[in-house]
Length: 84
Image (cartoon, rainbow, N blue to C red; front, top):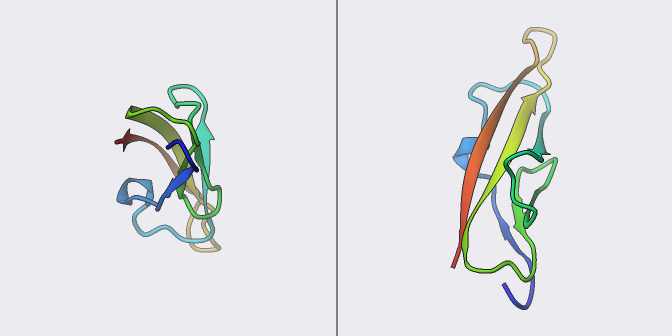
């Protein structure tokens, strides 16, 4: 990734089954690579420019806001990103 940053679309791991209400994504600093960031609204993972080849981890807390019939729910997942 010498010339520009790359973005990876949201993966299946970052979904909450039957989520109701607004879904947000937040990077968990502990256990996450500094070379990866996440879009809080879409869940797309961005790999910073200058990242060397290898496998990187990002821990993400996914939260569904719920609605009047469903409670708020969240889960924390780890996604491995392989840079070639």
